[in-house]
Image 1 (cartoon, rainbow, N blue to C red):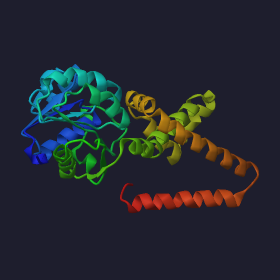
Image 2: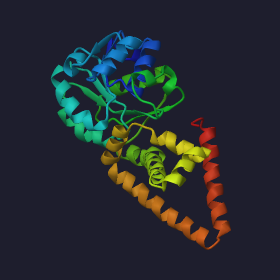
Image 3: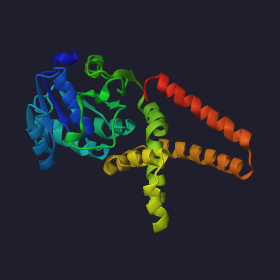
Image 4: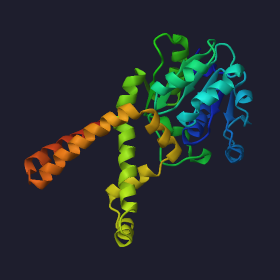
Length: 294
């Protein structure tokens, strides 16, 4: 099966990622029929107004019936319940995938509730904005961005190839990775930065009123960037931290140790140490730009 051979694709959850993926699938003609499945009546009304899908359903089982590919684009805490609901309706040979930012829990919570006659190919597109909802999506969101697939070794290779081809077709670079390794990598590249952003903005909120008002009024680019990150969907990020707690706590411990080292260097005027750390960080920024991920 290739991406173009999907006759029916159902996307469950039409927020930023789900609606962007739906837009991209339709733009590239990758599905005969695209079904938007969302239990929120307001979201379904917006999907219909924007014309984002061929069919719209609030019924999980009915929405995935006869689908060749089902993609979960909901908070990861919903996966097990959604999996149990759609399991009886999944046709033999169907592929189930997702776009969640934590992958070990997909194999832990979703895989056991799916029938043996379907193929689970977990996925994670490394793309997004701080906005949410069906209207926030755009078809080019995934172009030039990585999509990580984390299938188990025994997963049907044709199913993996089909999901790989879909992401390639909408402009993503695709790589396969062990789920545990994915979670550790994303803990430092995505999850910890969001935790820091939420913390810094929270600290500003707790300042005295006169200082807090000036923080908002005179926000420099650094603080503005933190507020942008902290504007991300609270439900999604709550679930990410709770479901990737071991990797996040490990990276947070490393960060804490590094912060203590910087604190000591500032207290004792160790300029050479600070300069070396800042120079090393600056080089990482150049690498990110050269990799076209900035």
